[in-house]
Length: 304
Ligand code: SF4
Image 1 (cartoon, rainbow, N blue to C red):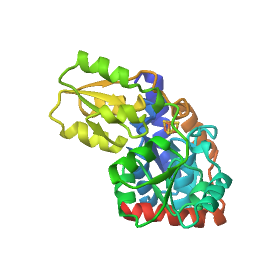
Image 2 (spheres, helix red, strand yellow):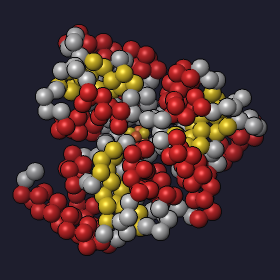
Image 3 (cartoon, rainbow, N blue to C red):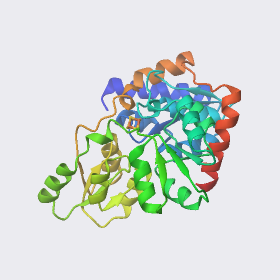
Image 4 (cartoon, rainbow, N blue to C red):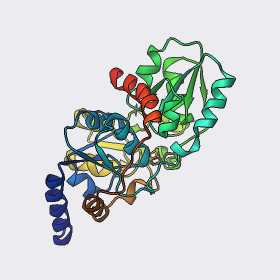
């Protein structure tokens, strides 16, 4: 970090104390943002942290649905999202009215929503899940029919792992679909001893040829415990920063340099500072939606 970046980071840390704020950052955030965060993790870890914190304000370095989840869990805290426009295109692929229509077509179905959904969609769901706990959670459901929204690829993966028939919404992550099976074949030739780990938001043909299918939190843990010296990684490129930082003795090779989530990269040290100075923009979920959405999120956190 050069001098001006270091000064900026220092300003953020001192303002953080003044505001009694906690900074949470997703694994896909820019390296310099990860470096100043109190906690870096995947969606599940971040929501668990948001639920536990005693800070007055949460600065969420991630995308809109993550800040909404923090607001759902901590209604009396201020939740800052430094850039309001940082959204998740996958989460925006389904609206509450789409889900209501789907529920009418499948009465009695249990609705599982990926955490990458708006608060309104969560409010229409029975249980929320993340890529870390989706298989475990669906496995335990006793339901004749399961509706899974919005990620068709995560849903497909969960359905193959659990053997359960699921009704899938055709959403997808525009970043993870850039990861191609041909790239894995090419890299395997270059690094024949490397392990391949991919995120379950990847296409089924990518997931099918990987050695490990893991959430970003799972990737962090696996990278530490693995005996492999080289690991090929299929997820958003921001993960590579943390993997390299925490495992300097190992080599991490991204499957695709194109797997960049532009929304995750909107948060910078500058806008974190501005947002803490102004205590804006804030994300606050309306109470009637929050109470319904909280039931789905609480059920997820109970399962862990
Ligand atoms: S990486 Fe994909 S799923 Fe994650 S925030 Fe970006 S668009 Fe959404």
